Length: 187
Image 1 (tube, one colour):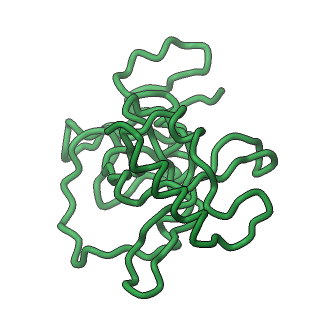
Image 2 (cartoon, rainbow, N blue to C red):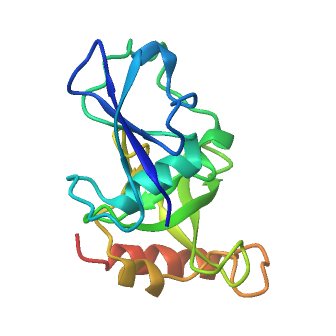
């Protein structure tokens, strides 16, 4: 377990941030200046209304985790590069991380993202399992800085990988099996 440093934005008192070091050098300077509020040691009770696991995932991915209203200018465009999506956490409706996006699967003709390859389980990539989820089952959550889904971990674990066990490219039958599985998952 880690020690987490909780900071408050001087210019936006409702905005908090977590980092691993008391200097806060990894925090976004455009939202600061930042004031260290307290350190939360591994053996202390977690009394903050955001999951410790979510904070840990944000710190691992970005070097910090923001909590509260973020006043940033609107994005100049509504697209994102695929390499910025790859590696992003996937959370269930209880905000527990259930996987990580490995790659996007794009329909050749339309150019539309149809599925995402999500990995879960294992340690350092060893023993991890790949599952293919329809892209429309995910929504981006700005506060979590990850994708959320209404799917349960059990539903995700029950899905097949589009590529099969040997990593071979999918044929029409396998694609139809995937579509059938996700069509029958309760909403």
